Image 1 (spheres, one colour):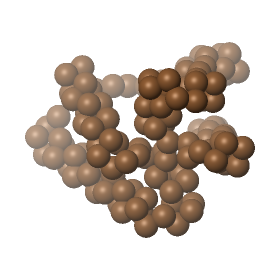
Image 2 (cartoon, rainbow, N blue to C red):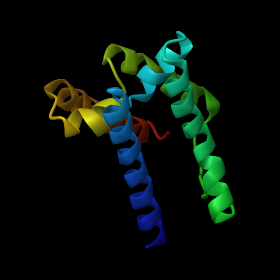
Image 3 (cartoon, rainbow, N blue to C red):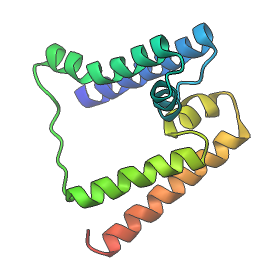
Length: 136
C-alpha cells in the first residue's frame, strides 16, 4: 500500500507541475525541450527552476522518508549509456519525450502525441522482449 500511495503522490505532483507550467507559462512540460532550451540559454529562469526541481526532488524524498528506495540495476554501464543515447535521439526525432507527449499531449488529445506514445510503448515492449530473448 505504501508503494501505491508514493506512486500516486508522485503522479499527482508530476501532473500538477505540468498543468501549472502550461497554465502559468503556456509551455508544455517536456523534459527534453526544457533541457534543450536551457542549454540554448532560452527562458533561463523558468527552465532552470524546472530542472533544479527535478534534481532536488530525490533529496527532498530522502529527507522526508529517511533514505532512497531500493533500486537494482542488473545491466552494465555500456548498455545504460547506449539506451540513454537512443532515448535522447528518439526524443529529438519525435519532437518531444515521454513526459511532454505522455502527460500533456495525451491530455490535450494530440494525435501526434498519441502516435508518439504508441511508438514509445511498442519500442519498449520490443526492446524488453529482444533483451530477454538474448538473455540480457
